[in-house]
Amino acid sequence: MQQDEQATVGKLVLSAGNRILREVLIDRKRLTIGRRPYNDLLLDDLTVSGEHAIVHTVKGDSVIHDLKSRNGTLINGAPVMQQQLVDGDCVDIGIYRLVYKVERLETGAGRAAGARPAFLPALQPPTNLAGARTSAWVPSAAGPARVAHPVPPRAPQQEPARTALLRFLGGHDAGRQMILERPIVSIRNGSGQVAVVAKRQNGYFLTHVEGLAYPLVNGESIGLGAHVLRDNDLIELAGTIIQFTLDH
Image (cartoon, rainbow, N blue to C red):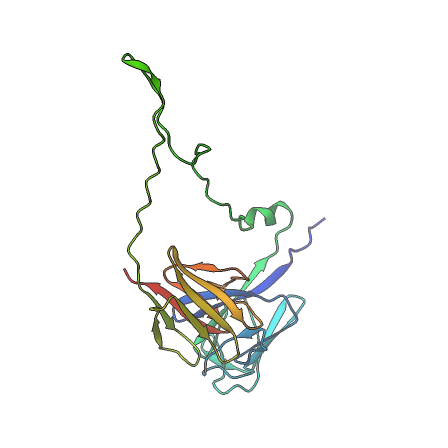
């Protein structure tokens, strides 16, 4: 008796230029693409129409429809109005590229083996109850044994402050650069989403302030908490792509 074929799921790998921004799982029958904030896949650039395209998926088969967009939808370099997607297809919409991928859904141990491991905090070195390194007592022939005073921990040396820069890669401010000279700088886009970048002693942190969706960093939602930024991180603010860089 033959085993049933494994179920498959499609996804779109979003990139701009030579940089991958994030992956979008096609987990619904109707996935809308466009510049307006209500789209499922928001691409905030003037090369993208407000309602640019839609992907219909039935029983694992995905078909993309161009919605009479201004600049059109290209698949593997050819303009299309409607076409079924196959694994490896390159869909060009404005400055963005979407690569269609098909993955098999693993079951049981197979899925567990391929799952992303949970984040575990780094182990801290053991310390005594006082939180400091102490010297052992040593008997002396000249007198009774004495216990040395605890040696205070050495203060960590702070690295010199590094200047941070925001580069807007897409949206209305594409090409703009912003040097983070103030302790707190707000960034926003036309759809009403607002976030702040705060400079602290231990680095730069991004925090959500206003808007229906949380900002993304390298394709992952930052949630409600402050998210530490690292060199070359990509911030996505309702479709606006911003690169965070530190001077070297």
